[in-house]
Image (cartoon, rainbow over all chains, first blue to last red; front, top):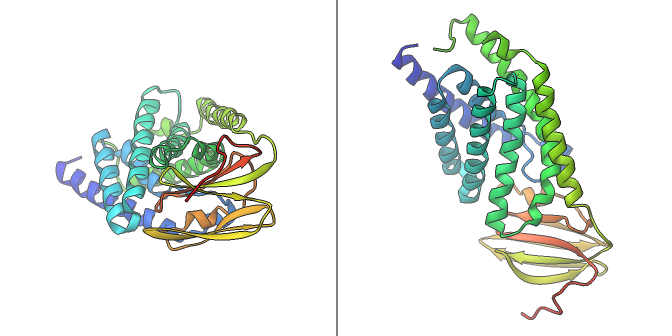
Length: 170
Length: 123
């Protein structure tokens, strides 16, 4: 893959991640599962695709840009702290678990989703100065099992389609 | 690459790990005793204790405004102008050990059972 192509893909994926995380706010998933912070994690599809299609550093840059731009577009400072800790922890674990060669994209995605929630709760614990917030984590982890699998499905589909369009890992 | 996109046995291990963590954490935070009070914290500081057996409503204002309502032994944030309003989305709760949080406003409502080491709160 040429550098120009990489740059264009990074920019495209940042925009896509931002749009997805914004659009997600309008999905009333909380009516179904009344827990704070329950999300499908659609933006995670982009991180995952970036991880498999581009290099680790590209995935990191896309993640950081998405978090900061997301804060500018209405997430606020507390939202930034939560999405940054969650996102970075998730990316770190996804990189390691992919390297371990134990899991396919499904396992990597499930672990990533679980770590995203764990990171968010850790940030909330620090922000709120309270351990009790962690009482939510078990429920969020169960949700992460489902959303992580769905994200992996979406991601596997996207990667296959991109491959047919002759966009494949460098 | 192809191989990485197909489900394999190792993935069950990942799912089992997450499930195990969820169960362990759930057991750690298992509710104990009857719910008696709700402690309202703002930025980690206790500002009010609400007995759950008496209906009441308070407003907490710090940047954003949360309306906290106690009704029928349960407590909820019934209105909030914070972005997302996750705190309202939490709904009603009366489980000891559970807490309702409004992160943008720095509000935490902790449901506690029976006696607490705080005698009373002034202010």
